[in-house]
Amino acid sequence: MRLILVGPPGAGKGTQAVQLAKHYKIPHISTGDIFRANLKGGTDLGKLAKSYMDKGELVPDSVTNEMVRDRFKQSDVQSGFLLDGFPRNILQAEELSKILNESNLKLDYVLELQIENSEIVRRLSGRRTCKECGAIFHIEFDQPKIENKCDKCGGTLYQREDDKESVVMNRLEVYAEQTKPIIDYYRKFGLLKQMSAVGSVSTITAAAISILS
Ligand code: AP5
Ligand code: MG
Image 1 (cartoon, rainbow, N blue to C red):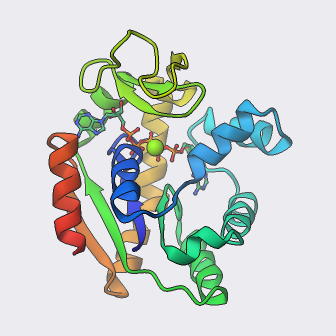
Image 2 (image 1 turned 120 degrees about the vertical axis):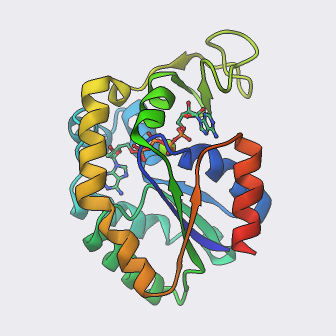
């Protein structure tokens, strides 16, 4: 399976990506997670990315595209992949086509997760993320067994800087202006599948697998 997950911030891309990557036994490639890992490691890339992420702006294409190009040099993508958070504009989508062509890989599907803005705000304001492994929880919808501790690795949970309401609003605008156009772009190639992102996590995973089969 060679898949792109697209949808607004808080749609549940990361949550579903973990389930779908397990189901299809493919690597989960999240550009947001790679930036956050760099930030944690104190790299120059992490510092640069932070200056954009904290405002809800896109990290420049030159940086992001190079990072994805590098990731596709790893051999695990040959058995399939799930892209989460990339591409995020038309230029990135065109760059991805080049990267895939060079590796003789073809996309199977682009799956759009659809959700209302009011639900997004609820999801993002209650999200908690593990500092160590990046696992995603929610204070109401997906509570960890022990408060503020990750079920998977025991790491401390934190609230992402960009989940503050003012930043969320900008992320939604950036999504509408820059990312939404890629949906039509992929529709023209006949790759687009769309589904509601509302319901329990397991219901949505099952529906996604059925749509993609
Ligand atoms: P990124 O990390 O990709 O953030 P995003 O796209 O804004 O998406 P989120 O991670 O916020 O939401 P999600 O859809 O993954 O939802 P989640 O599963 O966590 O990017 C962050 C920043 O990095 C960007 O703003 C940009 O600066 C930079 N960046 C990244 N990629 C880039 C690129 N390609 N180009 C340039 N810059 C880039 O779920 C949200 C919450 O809801 C969780 O708490 C979860 O538990 C809960 N939840 C999930 N599913 C359900 C459900 N079914 N019911 C109830 N609650 C649910
Ligand atoms: Mg995510």
